[in-house]
Structures are given as C-alpha cells and as structure tokens.
Image 1 (cartoon, helix red, strand yellow):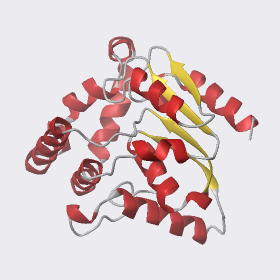
Image 2 (cartoon, rainbow, N blue to C red):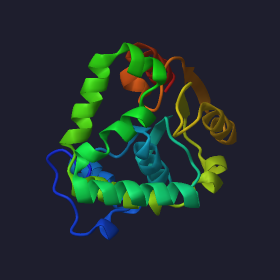
Image 3 (cartoon, rainbow, N blue to C red):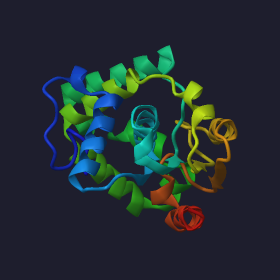
Length: 215
C-alpha cells in the first residue's frame, strides 16, 4: 500500500495530520481489507518507525519484524531543526531543491562513486514524491515517540539490518538496538548506506530469506 501522500495515494489536509499513529492505523485497516490477521513487516528508515508504532498499538498484527536502516530513539533537537529546514526548502522550491542533500545522506560514498545508475534511480524516486506528502512525513518523523523503552518488550522474531556507511542510522546504534530486543538478529551489510536494499540487494535479500526461513 502507498502511505498517505506518496505514490497514487492522496495525502492528509494538513502536515499536522501526519503521524506514525496515523500510518500504523492505515496498515491496520489495510490488513482488515485484505482479510489478513497479521504479517511480517519490513520497515526501512521511516518504515521502521511505523513498525515500532504497530508493535506499540497493534502488537497482534506483527508476526515478525525486519528493521532496516532505522533507529528506535526519537529525534534530537538538532535533527528536528534539520527536518524543519528540509520541509521549508521543499515547500518553497520543490523536491529538486533537496535532491543533492538527500542523495549525499542516503547513499554510501562507494555507491555514489561507482553506481551512477543507482544515483539516477534514487534521484528520480525523490523527484516523484509529492511535496505535501514529504512535508507531512517529515512532521511525522519529527514528532514520533521514543521507542527505546519498547525494545525490551518485543516478543516476536526480529531481524535488524544495518549499512556500514549510513550516517542517518549508524550501524553501531543499530547493533545496540538489536541487543536490546530479546532474541533479535543483527546483520551488517558492507558497502551500503541508508538504502542498503537498493545498494546491496543480494546481501539484503539473503539475510531476509534466511530470517524468514526460520519462522
């Protein structure tokens, strides 16, 4: 399914209406519409924040979880200011004004240097996004709760996947997060940044397949 304000989905009326709770409630309704009692949720970056919200609000829906290039802690004041600045720039100048900044943060250095095709693909993905949806998503991430207290309460299988060159969700923090989740597995993906499934698809797919085979 598309998140509100992304893909073919219409967004909410105001950026203030976007929240992790709203995203998670949307997934709960989606599972109802598909007659699915639960599922294995894989969340990349903001998707991981949504998985945490599902575990908090609808734990019975989560059969297992894959947390990829994400973190449990809430935004720091500095990160919040950065999100505000990014949202303001996108609103004033459009998505083209934030492409370079995002590319440098989400792709590993080796990817940017050796994979111009992937740089072009991710650039096109960014430019396709609706400004209203991105501004709303930035608000939702800015205001998300701290999920660190939730980690020790998780009772479903969890796989944590990190990139070794990810400045947004550093591998050290993700490994620490995995240690706080009972029984969680941790996999480090070499030569990848914040978009490890795109940068190293074979390694990420192998880790996910091995995890799913254990369920």
